[in-house]
Image 1 (tube, rainbow, N blue to C red):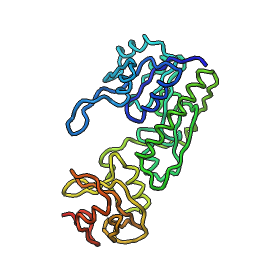
Image 2 (tube, rainbow, N blue to C red):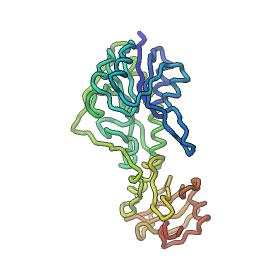
Image 3 (cartoon, rainbow, N blue to C red):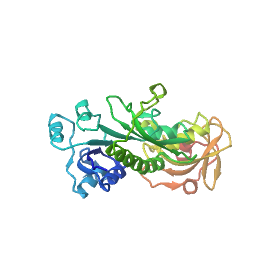
Image 4 (cartoon, one colour):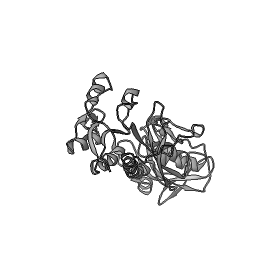
Length: 313
């Protein structure tokens, strides 16, 4: 099997296993493009994105342009690029970049396309209560996640699985499937299938305000919202102290006035929804560490009949 010269473009943790897989393969990663360093943490210190850090560690040529310009295009033209691999890079590639590699550009997308095209496919799959997710390897085109598909692999979404857990599993799975497709391209046996665009759904980018819990809906929807928002932007209950974050929950059958505490258990407070209820099993007050629902109950002496905001005021 001939070795391909690969340009890798990616930024966050999700893309790291894909880059590692390529670096450990017989193929040549000739350059890595990632986002610029950002200030992170409470100290607001500059830090390299995970992909950029791995590139430095692996002695790969690294570029961290603020934007893709004529200069960046001319720079990449100097490299012998058979194939580009784009994984959560964070920018849309102009057509001339898509045309640079001999074999085009592959993308690793964290959904079973055409379902959940867009910026937050993992979160929306969980929020929506999907029982299946997966990864898709497709060829990038001018559209948003509309390219022809080379391979897909699916995974079950457990009833209590969070978006964070699904993210980590799909990240590893994506690297495995990507390498299979790259090898098939090198051997001349890759096949690409057009998507059924009539079946497409959109996964818009989430904002912090999306985390607010709406108790006036069925408990399954509240539970899915909580696990779909974890770890970011985080499901929360607004309060005068700031957002009270809910990191995990379990479904309960008790009923009552939506948003009120209807039972105190060793696992945590049980709050009513429009139908059924949920038990808050991991909670975090503003500026405090995350505690179990049971610890939360004991620390704040919660009372049945109150909302969480009332109980803490």
